[in-house]
Length: 147
Length: 429
Image 1 (cartoon, chains in turn cyan, orange):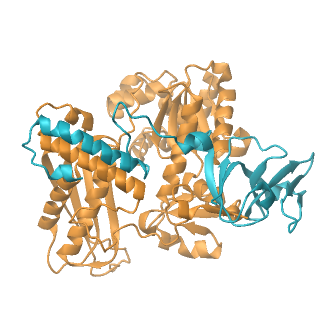
Image 2 (cartoon, rainbow over the protein chains, first blue to last red):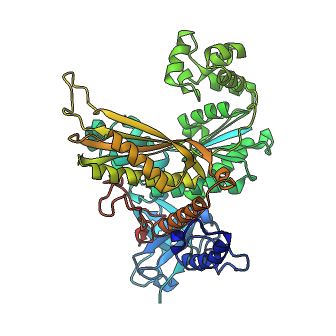
Image 3 (cartoon, chains in turn red, orange):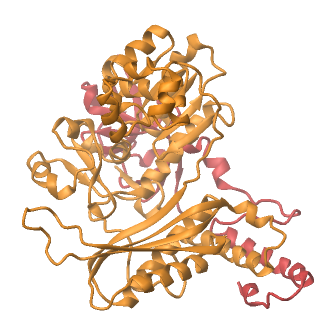
């Protein structure tokens, strides 16, 4: 940010020279998610949001703290991307509220009940008849897993 | 038709979205510094908790009924508010959503045939609830005043109306107006309602029967005419251009402890001034008027009659030569005013910085006579705002605001910032 220390009485020419300096600052800045590249010839870099978020107002992130869905590639510490605008159909991995807890499981809808299936032999399927205690919160669309 | 979409117990709904154990339990949300109750779930309302009541006044009842209490979590509410508004924008043609407050928006439905308005409102409501998890009530009518009337009825009878009321016939409008007490009409304050009752006007219907000249005489001139026109069901005269900028920006906080040193007051004022200037830049305005107040700690908390003493307040203001939204300008003015108000030996418990008298910032930027130095300073402000937005906790500060002391909100029962912080995401098992 040195450019602010410069003498304001310096003319337009100086500002032109400074411009390149500023834009290099802006490129660095992008890494932290702020600012927009102002140079005409610069292409915007690949934006992960475009790939991972289809509907921004309906998309939320969750942190996984269970190995119940290991078989689906969901590990402890992973980040889940949950899109509430995706219809929760049988076969979808969902975040659900059951007995005051957030669970991630594969959803199976029957006529009068719902089953939440784990993907880890350590856990059993949860069969829900009393649907008033249950709520599908949203459909998991991606899992972000560090290697 | 016009509609108003209003979130149901907005702050409580936000909290509930990430609190699976509190789905049908009574909950409340407190204001800044945990002072007053600002949002109540329906269950808390049913238990007789009153709106805007000081927290300490209701503390016994809150404990007795086990009402879950939250401090304000503005990061969460702000994010969810954006989601609700964005959902509306994605379902309507551009420019037809006018954000009215954090939890309310007017939407222009002129592109929908009257007979389809009800279905469309249901679609809007369901989509907002599905996408964001926030439940809303919708009132639709030929104009804004009547849409507010409709919305109030939707909220009062959530189950019967499914939170949507459309006033699409003279008959329905009249019935709705008859059910609306005069003090609940949009724009009629307590004072006016008392005045109107003297004239025997107790319902919105009675007021709608008055002619326009009566409104001009007894209801504040042109405003009165507009109000009565709309109650009569005539379309809003001139669609106001959507205006989301605030007319006044304030940052005020309780210190949370006794403060008697000028240096501490100065730091607090600089911090608040910084916050105000940020808000001002976000809405692309510049302020002409800077106002500062300091609240002294009362020597006794209750007087002889048992009335609570708030403590005496000192105010001062300054008009800037040139409207500004630059942090150093605002700090300079606020600190200078504070200095004239501050008295050695007094104990202070609260301070505030209030900006008003705004002009659009773009008018400043296009001013040919603006000093080049100012343009540079503006760039610096952008950099600082962006840095702080990216890193959050105010990594860049001005020299006057303290680097150690925390003049931020007191918020003891705040939930996590589930939607704005990576390290505070909701846990799923």
